[in-house]
Image: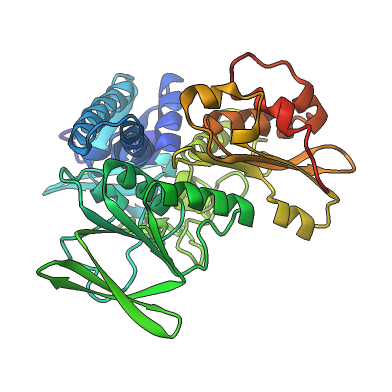
Amino acid sequence: MPNVDTAHFDLVVIGFGRGGKTLAAAMGRSGKRVALIERSAEMYGGTCPNVGCVPTKSLIHHAETGAGHGEAVEKTRNLTTKLRGINFVTLDSIDSVTVLTGQATFVDPKTVEVSAGDDRLTVTGDTIVINTGAEPVVPDIPGLAGSPRVHTSTGLIGRDNLPQRLAVLGGGHVGIEFASMFAQFGSEVTVLDQAPRILGREDDDVAAAAEQVLVDAGVQFVLGAQVIRLAETDEGAKLDYRRGDGEDSIVVDAVLVAAGRKPATDGLGLDRAGVETTAGGAVEVDDHLRTSQPNIFAVGDVKGGPQFTYVSLDDSRIVADQLAGRGTRSTADRAHIPYTLFLTPPLARVGLTERDAREQGYAVKVSQKAVADIVSMPKAKILGETRGLMKFVIDAETDQVLGAALLSVDAQELINTVTLAMRHGVTAVDLRDAIYTHPSSTEAFNEVLSASRS
């Protein structure tokens, strides 16, 4: 940290996440004086390369290819260390950008105090961007807090020893990805969730297919279960849960709490800046990502909404347009945001489910096929992974694709093609009759979109 008491910048970014670092780099290269504040040197680059997308997908890859857990953790740790360094150098090498490591706290709408131990630096900025991300939620269940056997996703990815028995509390995306990963590494995995089934946002048939993939991998599910306490025993952590009219328990070596994430705003002093938050604790923003203070913006997970690094990247484009463009770009322009759940094989989805489309009154046509039955998709057979299904939800009147769920090899790539088609009005017939390379996973569209039901 510079040995000065005060410093002024054109732009101050709080948090090293995707949206903030992209904006800081762009403004710095244009000649603006930029300060990027990150409270931990272990988080240069933000959540994604350090404790989110990159390490989890690295571990999943190594699990799928048969690497041992210890080897996978070591390779992943080396990768994240390298990326962290690259992220720091990328920003620090820009002459007009200063990276400050410390806790940022607002003093007023244009002033931030940065503290690191006994050191204090007062930073002022014409524009300030909040980019502090989100953090795991730990439910208020007796025994969870303080137990050495309890981990969030952040802690579990860095654990050197593979737990023989792992309980996952939560059947959402994070819980399911970790359940799939650790089952492949060899852990005995049990998922406990209060919902009657996993992946409640998906259609029943898609969720059932995903659950079967996990069951085949050895994952056990205890659904409709409310965990009521954790007790430390000589055999491990004993989780008591209520299910129906009765109570039961399991004993495990480690517990993953995957109960969602909340905006990370603790310690920012938002009240002193006059920045308003929603009932859920997210920083409240308008369509241009401007907060209740005109000179303060918020990007990424801290503002609520979909918690994806690519959404944060698009946030940076909106703010950059406000600061140095025409000022017309907004979140209202967004349409059809895809997402992928990285179990094995991955589940990717975009748009409406069949259930939602029918509830919204569309005349629905569904094109669907099990991957194992798609003759024109030899890629899956070549790779020896023919589990899953492909499902398209189509407006029967216009032939527009309303949504798709792809549980298959390469689904994380295929969904981007479908999303682009939806954004640009490419019809289901056009998608069906396109010429695709061979052998590829995309050519499955030729066959799947030829089979439909009302």
